[in-house]
Length: 480
Length: 102
Image (tube, rainbow over all chains, first blue to last red; front, side, top):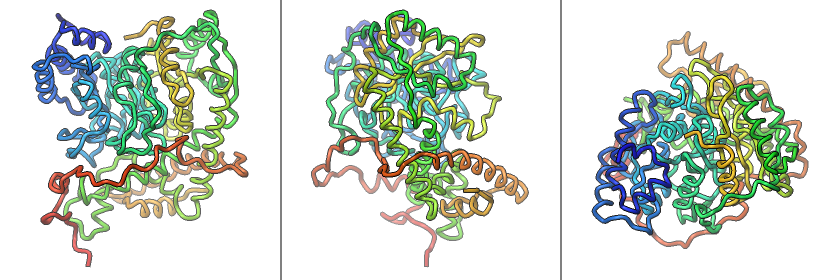
């Protein structure tokens, strides 16, 4: 059988279980596809060809196992998940030669489910960015148009899935880093509820906002991936004990009567005409199908970008403090003393956006500014969280755009503040700790780049999100 | 709060960053001015937080509604010293090595 790489994750899993195809065939085909597309896309920082082939061979020797729902399925992982014995760089010169001594919980769970990790994918350095343009190892390119960014920070994983290198993968989302690249590349992506997936072994950016999540070409594929990795973990005290549902067993939810809250602060934002038409058309189609579109207001939303960038940078600067050149990572040559070892190691190896955020965070946490910035932002975070919870009392979901702009050209550089403001649609969901599902609803008016929409659910409402996502998928055919 | 060159430099020093690392003095000065301008613009924007009424509102540091609670206090042998030290830039025996402090 040829072109196995075109199978969706669920199709591949079924064929593998039924022995219609072997794990070696499936993995081999995806590796060949990676080799063929990488020169154009640069989605991957490390391709685990040898390891993946060996794992697939070992799986084939034992044969399919119904207890392993992802048996033989190739997956891509953002290079922020620690993989024992395999280089994990966070796309930073700081960790260019770093090889973890343990696996992230997501990795352990994926392997338990029978998945084969085939590649570590590109990202903005330490997940700080929205285009992969801040990767120390060069940007990834959008498979729809290689002159355009794939989004970020999990842009490599999104590009890999959209280029049919892998049927699914995992990214992390601190302010939109799964949902935005999924949207710009025409994939489906989920930012789960904070605590749904263990963060053990995921290099930290902002610990109270970070959450790993799946990306794939279908809603049901994301559901399968989530089910495989969700659940408590003794090594991450923020991993919730909340029961893990059979996410992949959900049925499409009736659109008729579905109460969708439309935050006017987001829908009335300055949305690029390229997206505005397809988004409005999607709303009209939903209304026609009987969905109740309810304009709502999130009064404190106007503070969310400011709140987020204080808190994320404060936590980020704290997390980046561990990179001191002493225990692992880059160390400067011949430092005069210990202080120079710290300063020069950090300054040589950390890129411009990471430094900018370290400075912002350090400033917000420094004596004299702590109350005015950090503590104030934490108070406003509660207001924003409460607004979202309140809005979800009267609505089944909130429905919002993912971005106000389509995938942009590499030549276009946003100044830092403008770049931060582009996260407006996604980052409040991280502040509130809620789940958000990003899925395609059409293509841009002139350039034809994918256009995504976001469904925001209640706390641990992933099953409902997938259920609604399935109905959306029936109305808005997948782009991949 | 206005951000100026002095604040940027003192903050960099707190963060153990040398913004001029590896740069010619002229380039370093130009970069510092650009960075200061960027940070001033961002912080100027962030000052919108001052408008939010947070009287009596407790800070929210984590979005978790309930924590799983502490795990049992048992010894787990998770990593060997040797594996970890293999990643060290410099070592002496079973220690991380750094330049002389005293």
